[in-house]
Length: 164
Image (cartoon, rainbow, N blue to C red; front, side, top):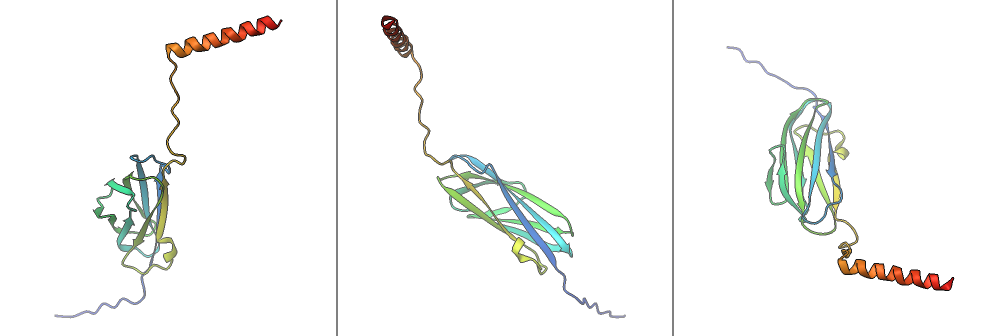
């Protein structure tokens, strides 16, 4: 038999980028928002064992995701797998807003390779509740209110007629 040695000379690197967005950006308490996470490999080499970790603030309750991510507590872990140079993968995460305020959701992408541009690995999106509190109720018109309005118009009309 023979034996062969394989020597890999050089460093492999993959510039991973995470882009995160949310729709809608303003949600009433009890309403839902959808975060979209997009992991991209900008090269120069393929990326192996890519994963995204998304940490939800306590005011956002996890509902579902489209990528088979696992959730433990407030932490969602999405195992993306391998990404060739130029490839992207996307995951949508649905949450329910459970309190009033503005809440920042952060996530981070990583892989087995060295990342030459680590500044584009994390990203954040902010979702908030409407400002201004409860809406002011508008009273509905009833039969009496229409009668009073008609009487007021009649009185004003008579007063204007007498002045002439």
